[in-house]
Image 1 (tube, helix red, strand yellow):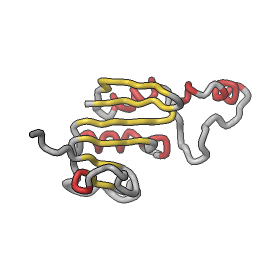
Image 2: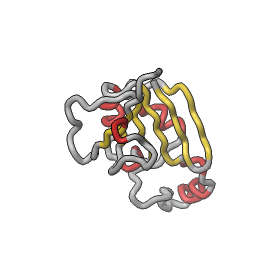
Image 3: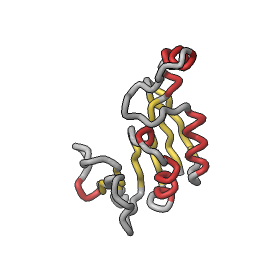
Amino acid sequence: MLPPVRYIGLDRRRPPRMPAGAWQAHDLTHPWPMGLSGDVGLLVGVLEHLDDPVGLLTTLRGAVKVLIVEVPDHEANPLNWARRQVGCRWYSDDDHVREYTKGELQVQLLVAGWKPVHWVQRGLMVTAVCR
């Protein structure tokens, strides 16, 4: 039998179908707790809200073995090109600090020491699985 997988989720609460003992939540407004580690880190809809996404990615490099990151895909919204051309705000969500292209996300992951091993671009999101 395989050992249970331990996840670190950066969200306010445990997802509904995640076993309670497998999920550790952390509020990013607080310092990273000593000893908080897991097998898989999930960053879904998080990086685009942060002033220092590379700082978090670097911290997670020492805390998890695998990282799954999902961010809004700037290139998936065809209106973004037009908005940028005329000088309008091009973010799709007012509380975003940034939105990402696959290339921009890849640079931040590499700078933080992560190696993307699988990419998915679907809908308005881009997802990277990293080791």
